[in-house]
Length: 253
Ligand SMILES: [Zn+2]
Image 1 (tube, helix red, strand yellow):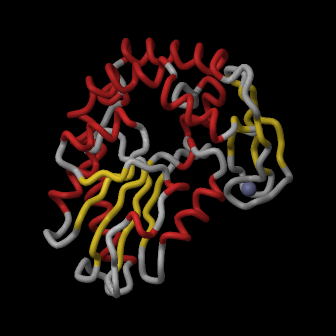
Image 2: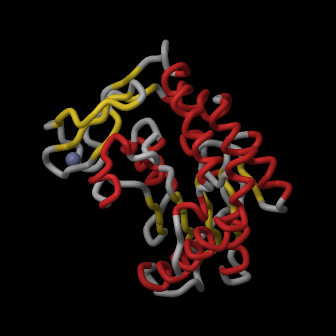
């Protein structure tokens, strides 16, 4: 299926969003704490300065080539940004709404199909029979969960894990089962009991926004048991677009 960037990022709206993001990056994180982390992919500390963008320092790992922001704003600052920043509000109220249906078709449905096939390929039984529920971490407006409900077998419960009140409300309005918590706060008791059945966690395009990816995966591990699956995706610095454009790459905010 072909997709142009302008399908999901209409140029005029994207330009406005980019300007707001730049302003927020420079102003919103002025007086917050920044923490250094090791390479989020390999844990290495042989790191090299890559570039500075909107006041944020980016480094590459000399061991595995991962490109990431370091030092990073504190967890609290990141949460405040996603709850209050004008650029995030613009994204939710304008940018996202304008592109929701095209994103549904070009992004969320293919993502749902990927999950269906991944379970057939990677689950211990190579099928969905023992999967009791699927929980999407950082569900946003809930479109992926909506599509997952259509694609998954009828015995599978779909849960939206979404801590932002504006977003979890949208999920509820879509009739989704919502757990309004962030991953760090999520307990086994918040989730449906599994007994000897299995579950799936999904986390698409969010690993790059968490303060410390290692902590994120440790929290996933805390909630998973043998035979469960975690299916996730994230941006990386090896695409031809970012390798050519480097700090001018607009999706790198
Ligand atoms: Zn590394």
